[in-house]
Image 1 (cartoon, rainbow, N blue to C red):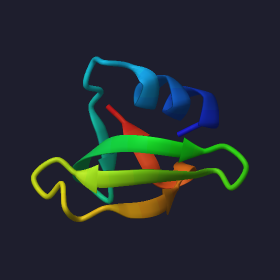
Image 2: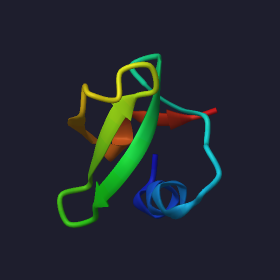
Image 3: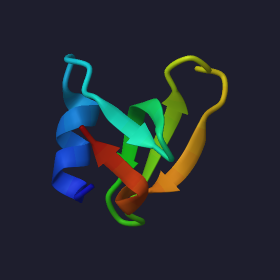
Image 4: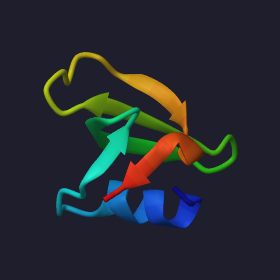
Length: 59
């Protein structure tokens, strides 16, 4: 996923269909400098992690 689209999704109140490794996730924050995203699986909000933007897929 490109940085600009990840920023748009993170800022939007509308839930986007994004996956990380096949798991639906919520993007909390995007680190533009490092090109990383702070995410968590929709069914495990306590399981936050930072992942590279290019590992996220929008469906």
